[in-house]
Image 1 (tube, rainbow, N blue to C red):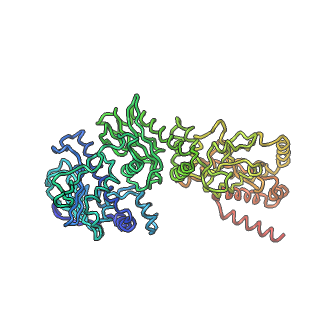
Image 2: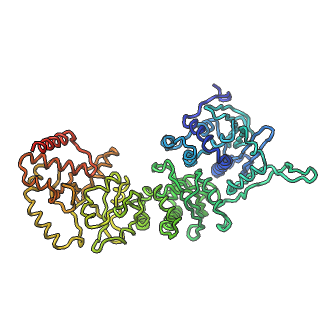
Length: 637
């Protein structure tokens, strides 16, 4: 088929699904279509401006970048046009027919059919161009890429039902023109006043002029009449370059939606002009919800880089550390060269200064919420932690210079509260420490229930000592970097020997020595029986109810970390655990005088301890066989 002929192509399956959901779920907020189309037009102009740094000829004697909005009452159309970068035929097919976004499948799996919930999810996903189908029954896109000849124009057209057509057209002017053929009942949009009010509400911050045909009162005709001239209907100055005092919260929030393509309000923002060795302006936002691609560490950052108001790139990940990849916003530098590349950004000292300054600002924003007296700010931090806490934990290992600040922002579940909500800070923990306690105790597990019921906690419950319950996948990694806080060592209750320090009195220590001596022979026999499973066997003083538990040697990998690595398909170092037995438990006391089936009893205790901490048995069949035999023996006695 010749490139000039009209082709009919099918939408990607996800696009069909999205279009159907969007038209039904977002209808109550249909005005956003204009914001999305104007944002896309602004991005197209930004991209052209950047490309003309190296190729000025792409301006084609039309250097004044602008966006146009027009309507035609008779034809019942609204047209949004720009003289930005434009699209080639292949780009039109790719950008308007598919969703190239990581997390797409996960996004669709979360849709419920509940219009209100789905609307929030769709907003979170970002819909851009497709939102136009909320008000349009058909969309025509006429476009030509800057630098291409007039004959290389492209017309894309669709009714949003399942396919679209593409054909070549003559288009003398570069850029894109989107014509919306309105659905029945959308005539209120065919009004100069209505379109202006939507633009001023959602797009006033756009730095390009948004032009509309001028409408004025005609005294003779006693009516509003259209003039043959255009007027700019927005402020048309970069929001971040304006004085903070002149910007309303609503304007800040709308600008966030423009840079992030998120529908929800941001949680917080910071706007600063930094002067000194490096001069730059930063306008940074913390979203209220995590995006679908949060766990894709290769996902580009959410920071748009401008240099002296000229757009350079919209994913400048070098300006923010990976653990703050959820931050959105704009950084505008006065010092960097306009022809800066990603490679130069990585090596630039100015970029390092901007990155460090921006990191401090974001942490300061979070500290302001976390340490606030006002309940509203506290609730905001709790919401932030729920969405982004696991990512922030990555900063403990990645940002040594700010490790102490990040540690104060961490939140955990703990035995102090009977809930899996992570709301205990290390500062809270230290403030509640028992007299004589000099360590911060924690346990790691696959989930909250396993952590809460861990046999390793028994002595701590008895003595009323708080233990942090760590269940996020990132926790084990984080703990390899977070060794102490406020001068107090962080200690796993499931590793090494149990040293309760001053929490134990001399009488208890003396009693422990006597018990260890009394059980020396049993321990020796169990070591022999379990030589293939256990590194060591010893008497435990951390148990009050359970007969036994497994612990990792002080310098070995914890059982939980070994399981995480195996689940991720990685090889974990082969290290055996230590079996600790409870001398006060009837099973252990019975084993002391057991001659028959001693080995079976020992293996049974070991396997039970492994199951109790969430481990998997290497040989489940042998465990079941031993258990059944014990039950039969018990029943026959």
